[in-house]
Image 1 (cartoon, rainbow, N blue to C red):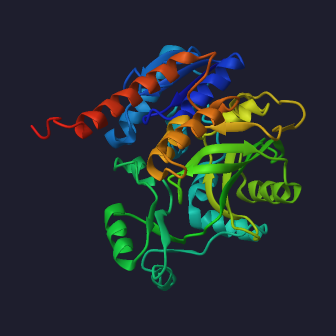
Image 2: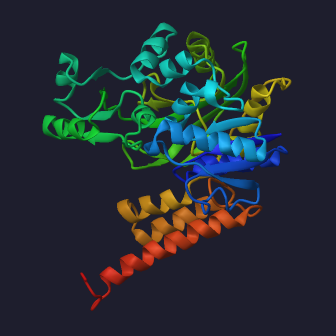
Image 3: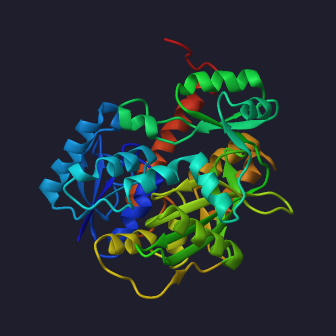
Length: 389
């Protein structure tokens, strides 16, 4: 069987999926604007196919995907980016391979953060206070620190507009207004919640049954307030939360992989802050915990029915080393040298999103990039270094 993963952004999530599918016996291709990426460097990547970003237009994107399907005979097409997931879902009738999602209406509703929060409320899952820009509630929220994000991340890309609109933390109405102007689209203002980042990941079949469950908790994130996990650990399944997550999947009508991110305030119930209906950055942790999420999803998408339920083993550690090093450089909690040593100690025995002894070339590629960045920093900081042209 053959799978194409569309990835215009050279993401860690795609690399994790390539490795997972390859280990399960799939022939995997990566559709990206250029041939040299982290994922195409993997031993598990069989093909590279030129696929432009959505900023080149939906028609060009679909034509490129179909060209790859025609050349390679791909059975199923995934993406690790929200905009491309929405595009694949929206244009599925024009794509000559399986698009492994529920109906386009379901995908649109799940990716819409307001609709998601409303569905979560109906099954007993709480979310932070949020409102659309211009709503009186949004104006009141803006008087204190808030998160400003797209209502549907990646939606503008489907219409050929810039696909990357990062989440921003704003501390005043002036900052909120500036960020809203920069987004130039339907933006959401959300209460900023302090706590620890957690995630609950599932694979759901077409009958709504949950076939796989992995729960994790971040031990460090970057950026600290609204970033991704750079250190995380699997934990035992919280059955009460699992029941609610299963109910939410049924409420949405979801099929396939879904990662739900929660903020866990001290002494309070978890608050749902995000939904990833795609491959995600720390997915190698699930594989290390014994659950091959991409392979389960791909099997379901192509008509197979995996047997049993697969739960992630607790106590497995994950590190995004490159991000952890950024934390050490920026925060210096115990001094730079001590923090760097801590990063290297944590790396031993952890699952990594890029580094792998069995698949070293992506790690080498990333290391060369880091060395290049470090050399640029040193050139600017050394006495007598040239500045300017």
